[in-house]
Image (cartoon, rainbow, N blue to C red):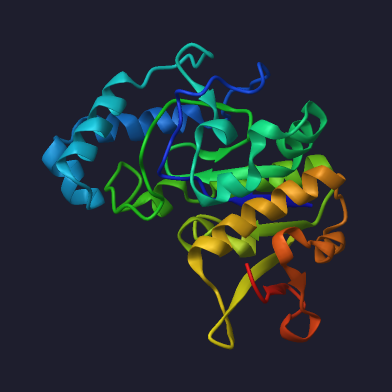
Length: 257
């Protein structure tokens, strides 16, 4: 099985990386095209396009200006260690031993507005570019049109290399929309995480995001190869609920957190 997750807005380039092992992103020629488009924008343009403050817009205009391959440990950091946020706190890649990081490198992919698809140990330079951004570009009116079939083809390549036919979707809707399910040579399993609130089970965004990272970590710790084994996921009180689940929608619930 192959798992996909979303990136995070918050980045940490201050903490030294927990491993010296790194790889290069596969789709950098595409990223460079997007950077060219972004470099034409003023801070005001970016603030408007991304609905961010002037300060964040300024920061990112600086990042686009500085963006420069080749990526090295001196100017970039491994994706799974650079992203912060709920999913990545659940994943906590920095605390995993080398064999488990290697498992993630094989079986986890991060969808990205700028990089398309990243492996956990791919070096990346700091950026902000949500997949849902309506950035007009040479290939279309937004990033879904820019990436087109590229992201799906990359995932197919990896599924084939693993000899697997299941993709586990731990990404948000905004990011998973970059994948073309009809062109994907795999069944798509979507875990859903619900917490009990006022007597009802609900998806609470913060907890659900964290749980996506926890599930990827749980899989790495156990070297899970067969997706059915994920139903045993029990981190932080979650449990698989067969009655609430469908064939490809797997619901995990917990009473208290």
